[in-house]
Amino acid sequence: MLLFNPVVISVIVMCALCLIKFNVLLSILVAAIVAGLTAGMPIYQEGATNNIIEVLIDGMGGNSATALSYILLGAFAYGLAKSGLGTILSKKLSKVLEGKKFVMIFALAFIACFSQNLVPVHIAFIPILIPPLLPLMNKLKIDRRAVACALTFGLKAPYVSIPVGFGLIFHQILEDNITQFGMAVTIKDTASVMWIGGASMLVGLVLTVLLLYGRDRHYEDLPVPGQEEDQGEVKMTKEAWGALIGCLVTVVVSIITTSLPYAAIAGLLTMVITGCIKWKDIDEVMNGGIDMMGFIAFVMLVAAGYGNVLTSSGAVESLVETAAGYMQGSPAVSAFIMLLIGLLITMGIGTSFGTIPIIAAIYVPLCMKLGFSPHATILLIGVAAALGDAGSPASDSTLGPTSGLNADGQHNHIWDTCVPTFIAFDVFLIIGGVIGSMML
Image 1 (tube, one colour):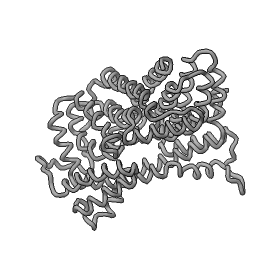
Image 2: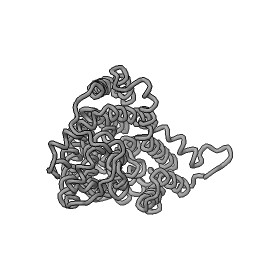
Image 3: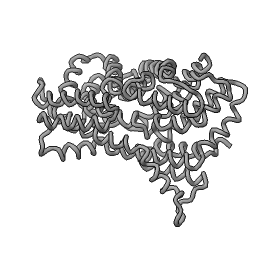
Image 4: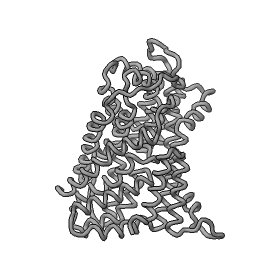
């Protein structure tokens, strides 16, 4: 029965624990153990390599590159924060956006878009830019749930839609896996249809911000660590110029190498060479980077291990095979069920990039059997992978916004980030995916 599948049970357990404000990292670990137990995997067996914790630990390497990237980007972000560049940019933004509540919300979404395609630093910009803006948000009585939706939109919609920067990686994974399993496609094909996913998210953002989170919300004017003193008029200093050069170097290296660790290292070295980071402060910068992004990195590692438990147990394949029985007859129903399965899997794994290889192996033959075109197949797999990422407690697209908006302790990760982003994007992605697959 579908409801008793280990994927379904464990995702429900994880979401329930998170909703009652249990620690996210521990929630994922409990969900992984529940998934393994319900799939018949042993907790411990002497000499065995298939017990739950061993499989989880083996799978943690799946996000090791991502975790390393986040630690290095965290150090890079900490260096930028010490240089004062983030404060300068925030103050200039504050002057431009003073009194413009909705302009500020959508401007932050626009700025976040650059972090995926133009300046691929991903979530590292959030703890630099957002904390200094919190006093202005309080003054404008902006509901931070709207800002969380805006930031998550900027972290996801660009790479889903456009094959540049992180988008190139996402579209390349789509192309490679769909082609590998029997349906030859190109990046040109993926780009020609995945804009539907981005457009669906844009509709969700606008409607959610205007209808649900557009009203005033009051927050206390609590001190923000590192932002206590009002520095008045700020000017570009030697350190700020060094940080700006470091940003440019990071962009160039990331474009040339398509590697975030290389880009972050190059940016850090540039800031050391220009004097933005003093030699004696390197340890402080690295420790600050771990403090800033270390928790997110560990969550991503454990999420990869959870994904390995789900796939190794055969639960994902079993879920799709069971669901296939409900997919006969109506293409719309088939599309909806496939997207729902993608939502469940990605909610657990927390990454759309890591979900594509898991579901493509089963979805491509299934789509061919059900008569979906290559373009419709691309859309279904791409949207299915993106779905849970928007509202998953284990997703960097939700952990990132929380890291900035909770700088003064007034923003809850689950209720103020995950639930609003789930409402804003998942409903509209499913609608866009189903309608789009019918038209392609």
